[in-house]
Length: 411
Image 1 (cartoon, rainbow, N blue to C red):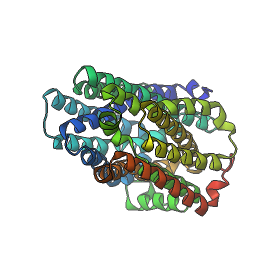
Image 2: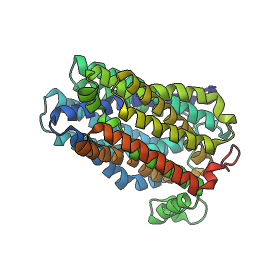
Image 3: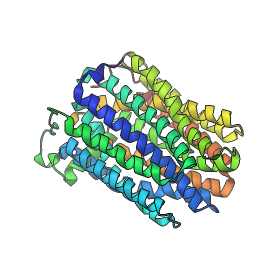
C-alpha cells in the first residue's frame, strides 16, 4: 500500500506538500468566510467573485506554466512558487490583523496567490514521475490523493476553530509558515533526475510558441486525455458549491463558524476514506473508464441531494459522498493522464489541464454565486448537480474510448 513512500525524494515531497496543503485549504476556507463578513448584504455575488479573481490568472498563466515546467528545473520552479505563496499569505495576515474593512485588497491578493500558484501544479505533477519508478506511479498518485484529502479535512476544520476563537489572520499566518515545509523538502532532495527533452526541433525544449502548440496538439488529439479534462471541468463547474457554504452555514443551517469548518471539510473526509480504500485497489483496477464515469455521476447526484437538504447531518453526509466520488474520479483521471503522457510533455499537459481542473471550480464558484444571488443558494446547488449529470452523460456517449478504457491501455 505504501510502496512509493520507500523512495526518499517522493517521501520528502509527500510530507512537505501535505503540510502545505493543509495550510492552503485552511486559507481558502478563511478567505471565503472573511469575504462574507466584509460584504454581508450581497454574499452570493461577493463569494462568486472570489472564483472569478482566481480563475483569470489561472487561464492567463496555465499554458505558460506548463511550458516552463518542461523547460526549467521543476524543483527550482516549485521553490519559487512556494516562496511567492508564503509572501501572499503573510500580507493577507497583516491586513486581517489590522482589521481591514474593504474587500478589494482581499480580491487582489487572491488573484496574486492564484498567479503564483498557477506555476506550481505543472512542476509538482510532472516532478512526481521523476521520483518513483513507473510501476509504482499509480501507488504514488493514490497516496498523493490521500495526502491532499487528509489536508482538506485538517485545514478547514482547524480553520473553523481558529476563526471562532480568534482572528481570521491567524489562518493566513499559519498558511504562510506551511509553505516553508515544501521549501525544506525540496532542498533536502538528492539526485533528482533531469527533465526529459522532446525529440526533434530544439525550439520545443525552450519557452517558445512552438512548444506551447505541441502541448495543445498532444492533448486535443488524444481522446482519453481530452475527455477526462472535459469531465473534470463540467463536473466542477456545475457542482462547485464550496463557495456557497458560508451562506448555508449562516442562513440555511444556522451552525456558525465551527459548523462551517466541518461542512467545508466534509468532502475531504469522504475523499480521505475513498482514496485510502483506493490505494490497494488502484494498481489492479481493470475497468477504469467505467469507474470514472460512475464516480462523476455519484458526485452530481450527491450535490443535488445536498441542495434539497435542510438538515446539518444530511448535508454533511452528502458533502462527504461527493468528496468520496470526486476522490475516486481524481485518482483515475490522474493515472490515465500520467500513463498516457511522455515525460517531455507532462508539464504542458498539466498546464493545459489546469484550465479545466482549476478553471472549472473557480468559474463554477462565480456561476454558483450569481445563481444564488438571483434564485437562492439551494436552487443554485440543485441545478448545478443536474448540470453535472447531464454533462457526464453527454461526454460518456460521445467518447467510447473513455467508456472502454481498461488497465494496461496506457503507453
